[in-house]
Amino acid sequence: MGRLRRSAVRATLVATVVATVLVSLLSSPVAAAEPTFGKPTIDSAFGRGVELTQPVVLTASPFRVEVLLTTGEDGTPLVVEVPSPGAGTTTLRYTLDVSEGNILPNTPITARWRITPTPDADALTGPPVSALYEDDRFDWQTVEGDIVRVHWYEGSRAFGERALRIGEEAVASTAARLGVTEDARVDFFIYADQTSFYDALGPGTRENVGGQANADIRTLFALITPTEIDDPWVATVVPHELVHLVFDTAVQNPYHFPPRWLNEGLAVYLSQGYEPGD
Image (cartoon, rainbow, N blue to C red; front, side, top):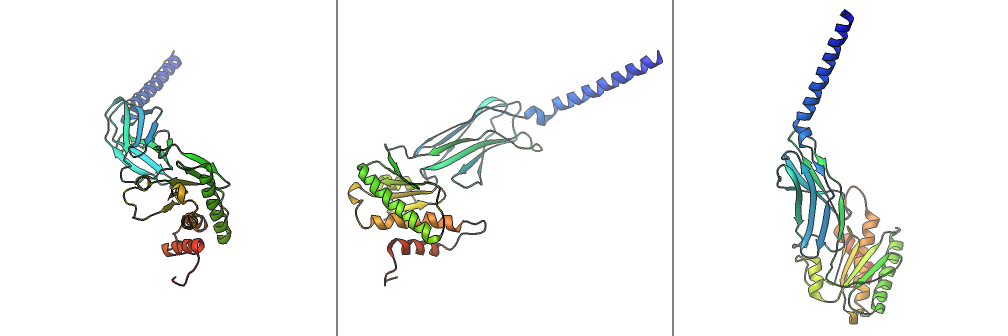
């Protein structure tokens, strides 16, 4: 009988310890506040913004709610804190403002939501969602070569193919000169009117700009009307801007970017040569 009593006592103690641990875990503020993420969404419209949503179930009001935004090839996210919605089943929302021109067309955007349940808890990150911020005002035509892909909305196919030849030759010759291999796609968007072109580049664009390249998204924007495609300046401006993209490939390193005068000087030299005035 004594042996049976001792076994019963041990079983009671074990059951008590297990129950205590379970009660402690279930009543823990961190466990109680842990969110359940649903499927996020991302929806962009040119000039109006990028709308982000994240369905979530919160058993307690979280300490902090944030959106992590990554654009282009930059792997470092922008962290934006948003108001805590309190406990319950809800949808988190955030709108990325694009009115200042800080996001260019053809920019890939990836967003994730991060929730910190309590000041002492680890942050929990939801699933990623991605989209391409596009200039959706026009019905773009597209033609592509080995590296360059040209997009335009006014002019014939011959217009687009002429622009493609200029771009492909500029990339190939610059890559050979700098000793690099270009294998990543370059997008070339051609605007037919100044207002639309400046709207795409944003309000901070300098006057009299005919072209602009952005290495982070490997995209060239140019203002060329259908009647100007054979003008001599086009065969200079397009290669000039594409030199910047190839130059970025040639000098990529984890330490620092070369001086801007070298980048700009090389673009001038390879697109129009060296003249007595220089």
